[in-house]
Amino acid sequence: MEWSRKFAPNQMEQRHWNELPIDCLVEVFGKVGIESLVETVPLVCKSWYDATFYPKCWEQLVFTKFPCLRSSKSVIPSLELDSDLQSDCCLVVPLGHNKYGDDSLQKFVQFAIGRSHGLVTMIVFHPKSVLKEGQVAWIAQRCPSLKLLVLPSHLSYVINFEVSNSICNWKHLEALQVPSLIGLKKTIANISKHCQNFTHLSIYVPWLDEDVALAIASQLPHIKTLDLRFSTIERDALIVILKGCQELEQLDVSNCKGVAGDNEILELASRIRVFKHEGSQGSFVHQ
Image (cartoon, rainbow, N blue to C red; front, side, top):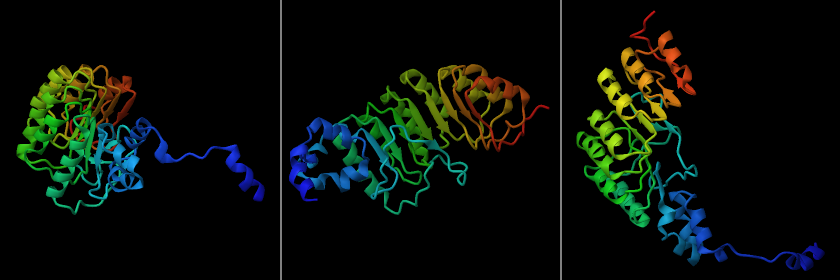
């Protein structure tokens, strides 16, 4: 013990975390999650506090438990549906109901996006968050670099159109998860026109007919992942998607109505790396 005390300092130079170059701190803090950025990091020392003002720390905003937020270290969160909320788009991790008012959430979103100075690439909302009218449009104006957006489970009539109209501001958008969306065909058209790197769409559709399917197949032919869980899908509509979206790598129609037990559909989907259809009901099955 005495030997280690005597010689250890000579064996290794002691360094302090607050001596790390600012670039290293910013790189690390950009991955720790908003909870740490707000509640712990700024309190460690002055250099850490100063680093939290760098916009790069605020590129990935995950508002899944507010204000005691759950940190997310993954670059792309798992986009999953809660099986207990068949028409809701939810994160895979079940979280408690957001007991805080939408005024508090709105202020926190404004704070975080303000810190980013337009560099936000990912925004994920808690499924039960409540967005105010004008909030999506406000985000669209200030987050031109957005690549991934996960919206709450329920959107008002007005916010539905805000989402559709905001697409033109997100030219780098790659992935979108929304609940049932009014004006879906317009949204698809805007994605096709403005978002050249778009690859992932996760949406619940109460009734997906050939008209909507044709819009997806003709305007999003390069889409890689399509998640339609719990939707009601006409058999011929699914065939249109399977034939039109030749670059699909993942298709999820599990717990859908109208697509189960169809050999033609299974054959067309055989080229897709991941095809999920468990729990679907074959209302439109051809024997």
